[in-house]
Amino acid sequence: MASKGKVGIIGSGLIGRGWAMLFAASGYEVCLYDILPEQVSGALDNIKMRLQDLQKAGLLRGSLTADEQFGLISGCSDFNAACQGALHVQECVPEDLELKKKIFSQLDAVADDNMVLSSSTSCILPSKIFSGLKHVKQCIVAHPVNPPYYVPLVELIPHPETEQSIMDRTHALMKEIGQSPVSLKKEVDGFALNRIQYAIIAESWRLIQDGVMSPEDVDTVMSAGLGRRYAFMGPLEVMHLNAEGMQSYIERYGETMQRVLSTFGPIPDFSGPALKQVDTAMTSRTPSTPEALTERRRWRDARLTGLARLQSDMDSSD
Image (cartoon, rainbow, N blue to C red; front, side, top):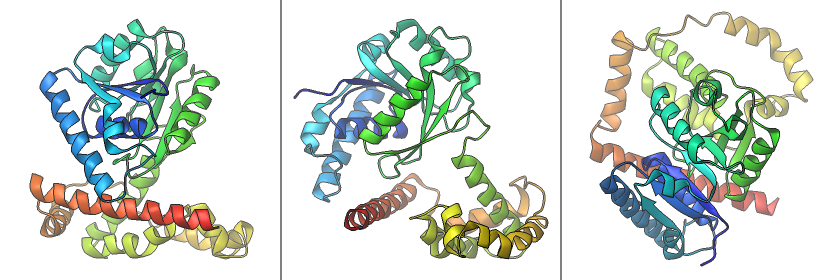
């Protein structure tokens, strides 16, 4: 089967496996690298099982069969072989700055002038990872949302020296494989998703810490309230539609927002009695055991997939 080109994946954990499945679903040849052969073989076994399960459930992405997609994925423990001839290399190692710098130093040594060098980091600034590399103009962060197969957002963050053509090319590639890329014009700590997510987490924690609400009710505010809206539109469009446009919303609610925001407390330290209360609530629903967490993640992934299908069906009928 002819592929669209080769993609190298460095790291065979959950994110690396997710990227491998996404690229293969769109017809790219994927080489999945990890330092130990047994890690690679275990990852390939897991990918094959997941593709088959998705096909049985009618949830497989792309037009290729599960076997055809798996046939595009190979594994290796030879770093140079994983990268050789690749048009795009996606790093997926743990969130450790020194480890990522080591990986990109190795990539810098084997890259040609046409290869995109991309990191999946969720919070480390590009300038901390890529500065000083010979191929720094080809480096970019493409941060997926976990699990990337089910949640399509990808944040693209440039290094100050990243060429615009690399941003454009990666944006087009992400669209091609079915993701929803957004581009940050410059690097900022936490990128966009985590800055917004951490703001929600901080106020959720304060409501529990201050005795206003239970952890269960805080989660319900999102799952049965805000989350229903935000599944289809962002907070700015919600504002626009909840009045006669954005200007109207600010005229009506601007002072109220400022008043409420002024009551927000300091950044929580996420410890002490509040942590114990939250942990008790979460483990009563899902015990912190590998088996229970895996089962709950399957529950989550099935609903994320169903939501994606609903959104696609509704968009196609608009």
